[in-house]
Structures are given as C-alpha cells and as structure tokens.
Length: 128
Length: 247
Image (cartoon, rainbow over all chains, first blue to last red; front, side, top):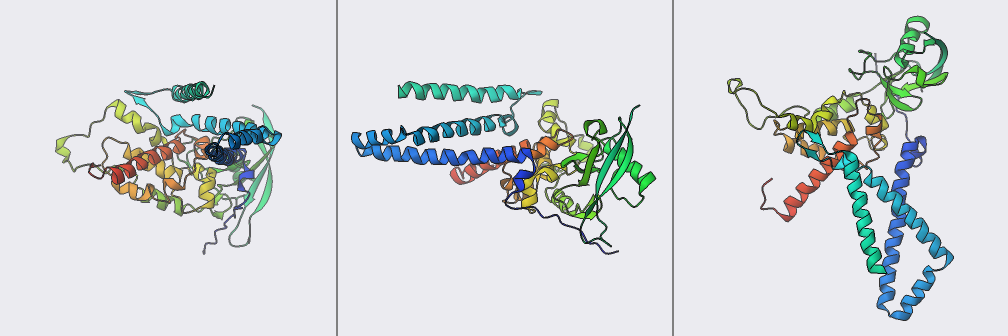
C-alpha cells in the first residue's frame, strides 16, 4: 500500500491568532517596538542636549505635547509588560540548585523585581 | 455513574480515497469518568471499525495517544470528558503530516531524537568489574525532571516555531539532549552540541513557552532550551574571548 501523507498548511502571517498563548507571545514581542522607538528617542535627546540648552528645551517642549505624553505612557506600559513577562520565566532559564533542592522560583523572580525597584530608585534619585 | 451523550467530531483522512481530511461526527454515550480515548474506543468497537488512531497504555505513560482535543495538544487518555462540553473536536497532532485519520507521520521526530544521541556516553570506558557509576541524589536532581519525557510529541504540536520551520530540532529532543548533558555520568556534550547548539537547534527557539504549558509530564522543555542557550553562549564567549581557557 502506498503512502500519501496529508500536510496541513500553516499561515505564515496570521498563525498567532489560532491560540491565546500565541497572542500573549506576540504581545511580548510587539512590546520591543515601543522599546526600540524609545531608545531612538533617547538618542535624539542626547543629540539635542549636545546642541545646547535651547535645542534641549525645544526637545522637552515637544515631549510635553499630547502625542509625546501618549507615546511615553504607551512605552511605559509596553516596557512593564515586557519586563514582567521575562522576569516571570527566569526560573525556567536560570534554575538555581542548592544541594538536594532547587531554590523556589518565586525567590528568583522576586530577586529580579527587587533589582528592578532598586535600579529604578537610583535612576529616580539621580533624576531629581 | 452518570452518562452523557457527546458529539465527537473526528478528523478523518483515508489516503486511498480522500484528497483532503474531513470531519465526521459520532454520537457517543459517555460516562462522566471517561477520557476522550474511551470515547474513541467506543466508536471503534461499536460505531465505526475503520477509525484509526494510536494508543497503548491508557495511563499517560506510553505517549502514543497524543492528539488535538478542541485545538489543544492532549493525551487522549488524560483528557477527561467531564472537562469538556457536549461537543468535542478531535484532530491529529498539529504540525505533523496525517498518515490516516488520527495517526500522524512521526519519522521526522524520531530522526531528530536519534540525532541528539539521547543516551549515556560515558566519559571513559570502565570494565564491569570496576563497579557502578555512582551518583548522588543532588546530581540526580539536576536532570531528573527531563527523564520524565515520554516522547508523546505534544510539545511539537504546540510549538509554532516547529510548525513554521520544520528543520527545528524541537523541544523534546533538545530537552533530552540537555538531560544527558546534565548527567554527572555523561561525557557526550560536545557530540550533542554540534546538533543542538546549531541554528536549527536552540537558536530557532524564541521561547514561546507553549511546549512546557502542554507537557503532560511537566518536563518543562522550554526551560531546558533556555538553559542550553545560556550554556552555548558561555561556550562562545570562552572560545572567542578566552581561547586559552580549556573547556
């Protein structure tokens, strides 16, 4: 008897709509775009800063526009989602074994959140 | 014991007569304690002897009865009827070609599994008279989780990357390679790295994590793949930045 296997084609463009977990994954990936744009914005900030106080004040003014505030809020939400989604899987990628047991995952995740808070406080302290 | 009439929609494909698969619905009187595999066995015994599917142990050990139940990769012997409504859709495992009905073509997985050498390659040959290879409970714990894999291929059905890039070595095979790499009695890591640290190996994985979510034995292949990435990255830095350091 000859074989005739049937291959089910997968859409290359919208496969992620088929499962909620694929949508969650794509959401995590899409947040990178906001982080990329924000990074470019920071480079512009440096460029304006180098051009002198007037150029920098203009740049800050532009950031204060409704569009600037909206983008910053969206980038903040994206960065928080991105960071938390990665923090929450760190025990899988970096398990720590001590003797005959593994360190509980929530301690590894908690350490990341703790580090995040500390670094954020340092940045806040330097910025004020 | 309560009985419920279930509409079981099964994807049928006969390579001798069909050009493409089609759904066939069977009305099955199910006991609430049944699993989907019991419903399939009822169909085979009482309604339609032509239905083809794989199964063996009926206790989530053999890994034969993996299939899509309502779009989710499941072992049919572990998918309880009481967790579903009155209509249950059963399809062959996603991402694999269909051989016939619910039977898939698994040669690709078998070849990939063999390619990662999932067996102990001792560091040095030792005569039997020299005694056993000893291992402490702590050394066992490092990889024990990965020994629970039953090769059921649910992780391959869940992995969108394997669906899109069939060359990907995939979750279970790499997790098993990692299992032996982590074994204190093993010395075969270099041989396995050629396969699993390649582009078609771990670097094809983008950590969707679906493999670990569907694993019926809680093996966490996604975790294993990320650990292989970390170890392979460290190898790269050692080789390129500190070439004088022996591995």
